[in-house]
Image (cartoon, rainbow, N blue to C red; front, side, top):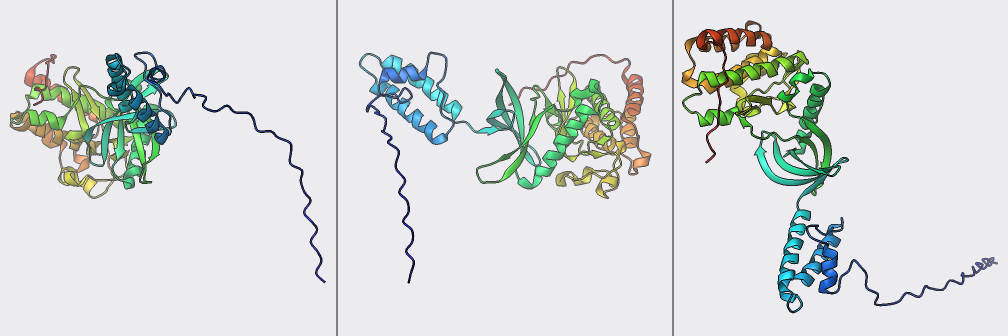
Amino acid sequence: MTAAHPATPSVPRPDVQAPDVPRNVPRPDVPRTFDEALALLGPEPAFPAFPADPVLAARRFRLLARLLHPDTAPPGRAAQAAGAFARLSAAWREHDREVLTSPRHRYVLGPVLATGDLTDLRAARYDDDGDVRTAVLKIPRQPRDNDLAEHEADVLTRLDTVAETRHRAYAPTLVESFRHRTGDGKERRINVLAPLTGFHTLAAVAAAHPSGLDPRDAAWMWRRLLTALGWVHRAGLVHGAVFPEHVLIHPGLHGVVLVDWCYATAVGTDVPVLIHHHAADYPPEARRHEPAGPATDIHLASLCVRRLLGARAPGPLRAFLRGCTLPGPNSRPQDAWWLLAELDDLLDRLYGPRTFRPFAMPPAG
């Protein structure tokens, strides 16, 4: 005989009365009239705040746009509607821009500034405790290059913490480095750099002077570059990619900055990655993946200067450059700052005491 299941005890329902919610009460964030939309838009010059959710943000914009459009404005208020609609449109363009969010900041992306070997450089703006600042985001085009971006961040951090601070301006400033997952699910390691304004690459300088640069102008670029390399080498690093597109000069300030540190390595180790289109420019030890040292960077920097000078280099400078690009690393100079002192002696014999020479790039276009 089958036992009967005990009856499930009935649980008395609490005597809860639904609150009396009045209908048709307007919500302050859902405007129904032109004036309510104006109030939500806010006083000039403020912009309205859109919800973080993209669907809700687009819904808010469409609703306000319908109410504030000049064609639907109340009689006699078309001009007021036109101004409000223009402010709304500007606010939406600002909100709808591509945005990357890190643990520290929200970056509103601007145009592509340059395309490097592995990355794109994007202009960006971000809010830093109420101050709007600009930055450059270095974004790998392929996820497989994330390790190089992470390596560059480590190198720039080392330059901040180990290298002599008085020469820190010879390398970019790292604001932060973070991982970001794009809409396709792929992750990128993004390095945020402080912007460098008014700078030009040595490649651009050479292109602007196809007959060669006056050696007296090339001299200060060469001197600054050797100072930068001496600073890097004393920190135990080799840049490993001193090519014209990675050396920036500021014409007015006579400044130099070395960029693209993802190929850097410790003194005594091999350069981790060789750039294919520069294969012929590397010294033999780099091509053989032998240990790199200061002589490796000196070789690469000297090639930059030799191309910059072209046929305008006098004989003593050509001989000096040949000694810096000899095949064997032990035959080349081993210390960039000692080499700078020798260069100064040579320049003094050729051109006399140093004087400041204004330098300007020709206008673009």
